[in-house]
Length: 112
Image 1 (tube, rainbow, N blue to C red):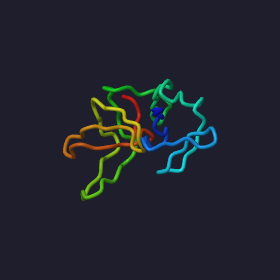
Image 2 (image 1 turned 135 degrees about the horizontal axis):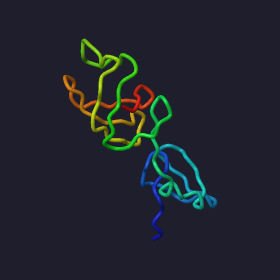
Image 3 (image 1 turned 90 degrees about the horizontal axis):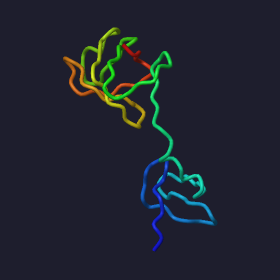
């Protein structure tokens, strides 16, 4: 049996071949097997000013951010140390003093 690559969008392993294309039954995405070079592309995250962020960087929030389930939010100017980049909607994982583990969007921070 031929091993098919997972879907580049949702990472589902239930892909199948259909008329020369690969298809994903979970998200409906179709792509050509020749386009399967998504692994070679580097994952780049940029802050609000366009600076490239890396794991371990220190960032500062540029606006007040509400936190679900908390009566107060994260204030603008809060310094966040030792960030970790992830490939999702909220692409920064970090720990903030007084809040704990948190996921932030890179468009609301600037590199310190």
